[in-house]
Length: 279
Image (cartoon, rainbow, N blue to C red; front, side, top):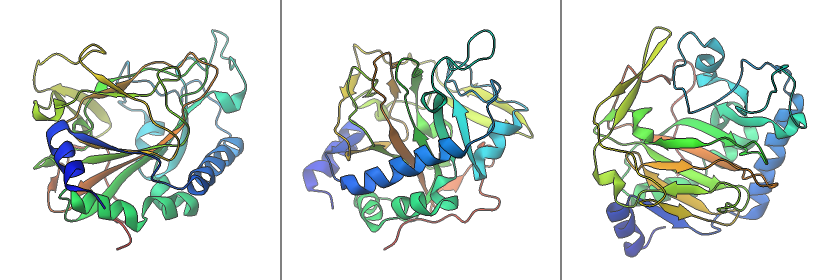
C-alpha cells in the first residue's frame, strides 16, 4: 500500500498523511451511525464530560467501564452553571468511545478492513490488535482543546508499538481545530504514562522534556476521507474549535501482539476479542 517514500517519511517524521484514501460513502456511513447513536443516547449528565485538562479518572466508573462499551461523553463546555446544555444536545457531545470497533456492526466493518492492515504491515506491524476506537465530534463553538500528548502513554507496550489511525470524517482545518504534530517528535522520550491500579488512575511523569508548541509543531489540514497515521510517541494536539463548523474524526489505536501490553494500562481486553484486520 505504501511507497518507499511514504515509509521513509513515517520512520523519519513519525507520521504520514494519505489524502482522501477512504471513499466518501464509507465516511458518510460512519457519520450517520454516530449521529444515530447520539440521538439514541439517554444519559444527559454533567458528570459525563470529557476533558484533557485533568487526566484523573479515579473512581470514574462511567469512563473506566467504557473500555469495552460504547458511551457518549459531553464537551467540557457543554453545560452552563445551571447544568443546562448551552446549545442543541446533538452539538454538545465530545466523543463516543471506546469499543465501537467491536460492538457496532457499521464501525466494525469500517475498522477491520483489509486496507488498514496492509498499511500497518508496510510500516512494520506484525500482529495488529485494535485496542480502542473513538468517534470525535470537535463541536462548533465549544469544541474542547486536546492538549499535547503521546498515545503511547495510554497504550504502553514493550517495545513501544501503538500506532494511531486518524480518519477525517469532515474537512479538518485551522479554523475548526485540525490536528497538530511535532515532526520527528517520536524520536524523543515518552514523557508520561497513564496507569490504572484498581479504580485509581495516575499520570506518572517519565521525562521532563517540554511539550511542543504551535511554533515547533506542524498543522495537518486534511480533507474528509483522508487518513493520518502516526507513531505512538509522536506528540500531537488540537486547538479548541470556536468556528461554526464541527471537525468530526474517527480514530483507532492499534498495538502489536508481538509486544508486551502493560498490565497497568487503563484499557484492558477482558471480554472483547483482540482482532486485527481482514487479510
